[in-house]
Amino acid sequence: MFFFCFQIPRIKHTIAYIAFNTTINNTINCKIDGFKTIGFRTKRALVINHMFLFFANIVKKSNPQNVSADFFQKKVSQLVYSSPYFLHITKNPTDSNNLVCDFIMSLANEHLKGKCLNDVKKLVEGWVKTSEQFFEIEKESFVLTEEAEQSLFRAILGRTPTQLCRFSSFRSVFRILKNGKLYLNNIMNMNDKTEGAYYDSYLSGPDKNTDVSANMIEYFIMSCSDTKKASDFDMWRLYGNDTKGCCILFSYNKSKSYDFKIFPISYARKDGKHPEVEFINNLVTKALDRGERIVIKRLDEWKLFFKPYEYHNEKEIRILRSYGQNTNGFEEEYFINEQYGIASKSLAFGFNDFPLKLDKIILGPGLPEKEANMAMFEELLRKSITDKKILVSYFDCKPYRV
Image (cartoon, rainbow, N blue to C red; front, side, top):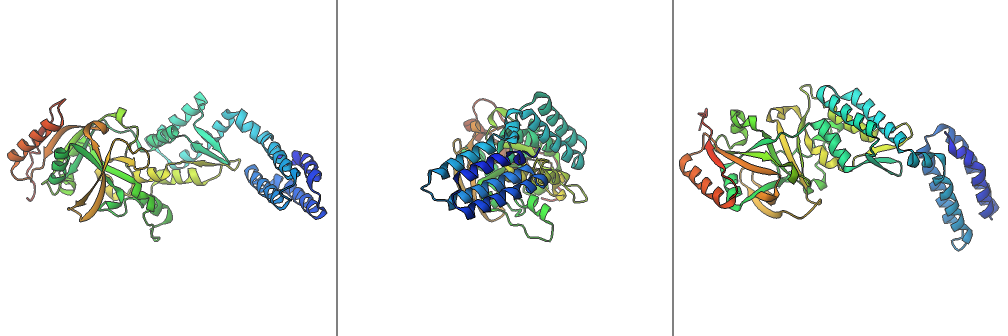
């Protein structure tokens, strides 16, 4: 287990070969003796760090012209990378797979319940059964592959329904049809300023002010709901411009979703607890038995799929796109969000370049001149979408106020 202790004689021999200065030689011997103790009480990953830092320092202090310094550096690298530990994790990936899977399952059993727990279990059991390499080993970390990240968060967040709806103002929907484009808005320009900070503020506590990180300016979103919400009067009132707006119905085209993250939002419980956030946080902050950590490269993006309990009635399905992923397929547009008075930046996608396809437009019960507006929308749709007819109707429900 403590492989460095068995390598001590060889390392001492190498050092003795090149350390001409008696003082340095004595220092090295003392340090090596110290490594014996470290080897028995510290995780191996930490020992690796100590050894590389120490040896690099010795080489740096040595005469850079000395050929022995280069020999020394190469020799140490050979010793470390030929050690049982490194040979084991590279030649026996199944053991590393099992280690990571056991770690994920222990945290899942600690934090998750119900369907979420069952879906995570099913995913991890599949990784164990197929011995699929779902991570890359970098330094002392197991870095999840992009596919593994997607699969893990699909298990946590749930699957995306095939039919979605989006509430918006009449002006915004007219803009969509007139320009033949669908828009993702920058998350920094949302009316709710806590949008990008909830995940971190939940972990840091309510008394600490958590600012939205600067890199949030790279993230653009569209908020939708399950189509069942299209008949929810509260949704019309809150998100359909107090019933004077519209609701667009979409079908989800998964084949066009490669550069997008499209998932349901995870909401906190009524008591304010958010077990899914705690699970993910422990997954990336706690160390495994051998000292390594799990890394989720796109965690900043996944953080945007968690919200507090007070929004749970929305049943939001969020479409997320990162500006830096792939700059093809969209245009940048700037406009004023008149409803909230915010100067905004959008990513504009043609109807054929977006993973959601228009199926129907419903006009709100509080919208004036319904017949004239329906006729205009139908004309715009005929010009922008030629491969199918998009139905335009109105929500037949009397608002409590107009």
